[in-house]
Image 1 (cartoon, rainbow, N blue to C red):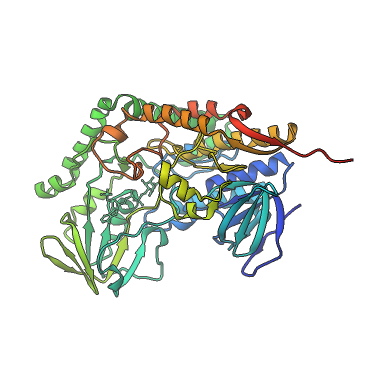
Image 2: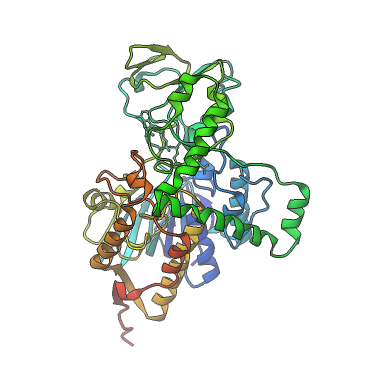
Length: 503
Ligand code: N01
């Protein structure tokens, strides 16, 4: 069955597919392309936005760009024709659009289709998915919602009373003109450090509210020369060679981050040097110097952030915010700063994503309830005990602090494709990972994570869940993850087979 492309503002009759994919960012779109290639399963991608792209469609703030080298930030089966070494958001979004069109999967999408609930139905052995476009049933559900999709808003007293322009970095309001305005930004993470230098020259005043100072490293970004682009396009294998070089260089960082955090001292000295080289004011230097080991929180890269903080119209505020009023922010020292606009750059719900609330497994419990109790645990980052026939892309412990998520996503897609082939071959109706296999996998994982900089570096970060466990990052080499997911290991799953056809 083919589901045609349509903008689903209205409810339609229930439809059935073999595979329903939620979301069309790098992971969901990749799943759609692999399903199309496989050619054996009908599928639909349920996408709440109006086009593909996921986080790269949604994050359109000034300065939005990738902090992973372009060569690594594309699918291995669709290398990009990048214009620079670190791509900017519009180019990545254009890339994803083109990949979707070239693969012919746009017609498999339902855009403007919000998934409200997905519930496993044991009696019929399928997922029943309620969406804004009506009911969809599917034998298999692939979650491609990503980890950085649900904006987290700070619970600051009075914030709802603010009457000026106010928006989250991932929902940038392009109708707001910040030119000549007094602007405040809350947060100093990867998003904020791209926004600050982009808007500082045009606003009258910019107050940057920092709770924790981040470590910032140089950004080796430059446009590719014409001859380089020509060579990447025309010399067979050259781009793959460049990609392999960047991959190997990035992979070595795992040793410092995960195996021997003391090795991070060199990088920390480099970051310290950036502070001295780019900031004149000794007081400001002190304020931006982090008090934890580099790598514990995501390492940021920017050549423009510190110089922007050093501008006369920019203030770094380190006193905690106690209250937001109609047109001002008050800090713990009693200072009130008047503003016209407020940018919330406070990140995302990662280990407590609201999307977990709507996915119900075999025992009628939601992913949110299960994760709340045991932490965000899965098996090989891709399946979850209690949730039959579910593939969870960018699932627990698949994140990275140093290299490209696209590599991890493609590894997961290999697993999904091999699972679907196995299921077809062996006439399998349902699969569900054994609790014991999942528990053993996680205790080994947490043991590997214990000595890493993310656990020992002395910081609080969104990598850790409310139980204090790191349930977001993969602690090993990414090629180990790839190897682990090469083959679907049916022996670690509870399997039911299809009923015999009576005739
Ligand atoms: O969010 P964050 P982000 N009061 O969570 C502060 C990816 N990304 O959107 O450190 C005051 O990192 C918080 O302070 P603290 C990347 O993986 C990639 O910037 O918790 N402040 C922090 O400073 C990244 O890691 C690119 O003390 C509050 C900031 O807000 C992830 O997205 C670009 C607060 C949040 O930082 C998220 O980045 C952009 C409160 N109540 C993002 N709550 C690429 O280039 C939070 N903060 C690929």
